[in-house]
Image 1 (tube, one colour):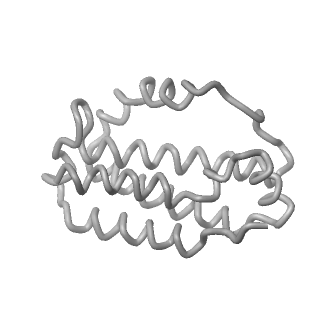
Image 2 (cartoon, rainbow, N blue to C red):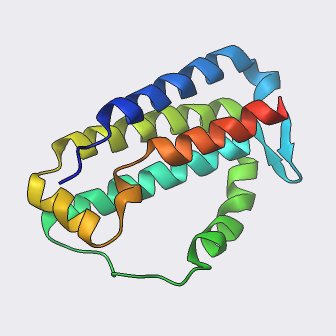
Amino acid sequence: MERLPLDENAAAVARLKTLIDSLGDEGLGKPVAPGWSVATVLAELAFWDRWALTLMRRWRSGHLPPPTVPNWYDDAINDTLLPTWQALPGPVAAQLACHAAEEADLEIRKAETPVVAGILAAGQANLLNRYVPRNAALDRIEAAL
């Protein structure tokens, strides 16, 4: 079994908090891409960490998610939730991103070996490797700033 990326996940949370602490309200409103501010990217990140947390809890309770979803599924969720994320005040989005990341990492730390093995066998390593989307989001934000 692969080792859990606990250190990498924690480093991404620390990076997230450092970035948020450096921004202030004005920085949270800066554009990253058309229709996407820093706060919107953070809200998206919060959602996907919360999604991973929810699926981890389901795996741990024996309620396995569907084995596959269509390739367009994540984009459809993002498109659906974008107006909600855009409506969130920047500080709220930042707080949600930090809390969701911390909670997801806690759930990952609690994952038993058979659960981790099942997640990996199902090709769902993204539930465990939360540092990957966190760092990608932070890279997008830093590039825009």
